[in-house]
Length: 303
Image (cartoon, rainbow, N blue to C red):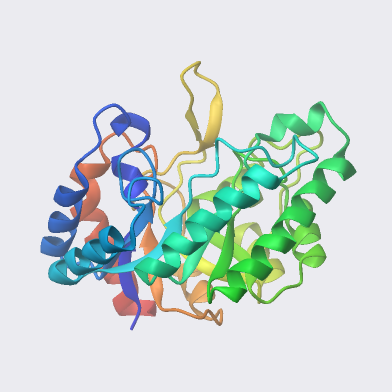
């Protein structure tokens, strides 16, 4: 049976950035709702390697999680202040990745999330192959070092970051065949990439078979799953421009979960977590219980 989790970034960025829901409140409430765990967004006041520098502090967090009856389904590392594609020296990025990887190990977290950091518009201002090679070279190092620590590395593919076309994603996977590296499949991002083609530079690239075709192309390299709906729109940034996928609650969009979830359930993944992602949803805290019920139904049917 799959275990249920939710990404805590839903409660400390976007609409909650200036007034995050206290992490203690989040843990206690998720436990009351019957979640099996949480996926830690390690930034903006929530536990992270800079806030909890000492192993004793990290051990205390593990005790609190045990008291709540919750596990960690993964770590979303704060790498957004670093440079990856737009520099020929990834040292700072790699150093920050290592800090977060060590933090994950100390907390008993098995998976660490990454993205390509820079927005897709960067490919309009620099050579594609230079950008591609910089990313691949850095991520090969990260994947190897994650493996050395007993972690798997998962790339959250989404329209808000560079290399957001299906062919881009497959090319990067081919260039990093490491079994320790794969993609996080988020049903909202999958819709926006494969069906809508959101924020894709140049010629839009969508798939006739939609998300099912996309999953088939990625099969064997999916190593983490996020479940949430999509209304075929992007979240807007402070200027009103498209940023990344909107994450409306289950039932408020167009994703056919009864088609997609059984297909995802066939993927061989090294863990049993299914995670809700309400990133940027303006009322995430108040719809969490509703989403937990929807996830429970999907687990009962397909998990």
